[in-house]
Length: 481
Image 1 (cartoon, rainbow, N blue to C red):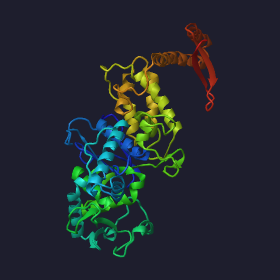
Image 2 (cartoon, rainbow, N blue to C red):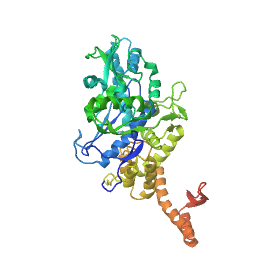
Image 3 (cartoon, one colour):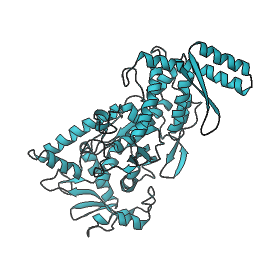
Image 4 (spheres, one colour):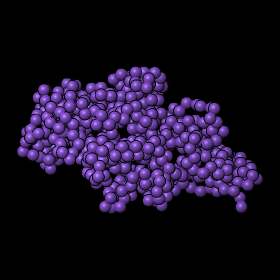
């Protein structure tokens, strides 16, 4: 892959696109914030899962071979599961009122975590190297909190341990929010025992009806932000290459992760590159249950709630990738229908490929993704591969498989012989049509007429027209009736 352009990624921390340089090329490390498993994942949750799976696949392509990662490769990907949270407590009390609280919480989180993993697989995503649960890392959280207290970055007040934001001179670098905005965002949680309104909880006491763990500060549970600091350190180290998540996590979650980790470890950064995917709305509106446009991945895959039909995971994946990851996306039935039409065409050709022929993933697709995951250019290149495939569809098939968009073992769309023949004919006739257009441009009308007449003798009638945007001549074909 030495002949490919350097991988460039937009770094939220510096607000610029930068050349990616791994800390250790034998173990490229990425952490992405996963779900809080109190309910089934919705379509908004699917976006970071898909986006960072594409990046994970790209990194594995750019850094192939043996390395020091857990599986012997050169890329380690950790995506956490948050299974301790007040929303989980409330859901456990609602759904399992007759069970002891800890058993009820386990019942909620195990069910929803299993469903999330199944959803991610259905969306074409690879399993991360590590998927740690927060409750399996309480000891690591306590250790970091003790270090922060010892170094003067945290304090105990009214039974809570709080991070002292004023102890960190450059707190707020990621979000670049003015101090007054940080205070305003924290007003709901401003208590008298805080030194500053923007100080945040590292550890809070638990009542008898709340889950808790023993600690030097009493039986309690961790704050949200400390969980990711502990898990990323345990599985990736004190500093690592890439930290990802949704745009909504920049403040306060990622800002506070950085504060905890840097102050505990004395490091200049927590991660070198911070990446954030854009917001998602559904049918032009913010997704909400009250508006009736709240839809889970499960509902999209297995019910007819959205658009009156079920949608294959590959269709959901392509629909998500049709917009650049940093841009806002409007998830709609129209978008899914377009993705479905595109995939049907690609599949009918990819399904004709020889499984014994395995070319490399298309070079230009890798180059497009190496430019900050430029999926628009990637899709344009896939269209070109489809047009160029003719009698060699293997490159398209291998490339789609690498992107998690196709698998020989799955039957997403019915494979009708007539549709297959139509797609193969389309490729064959298009070459003759393009040759005729070149003859017309060169004013070689005799040869253009010969091609037209040859196709007509085969029962193929050409129809000339103009492109509505460019005004250029376009030609389509149909079977002569």
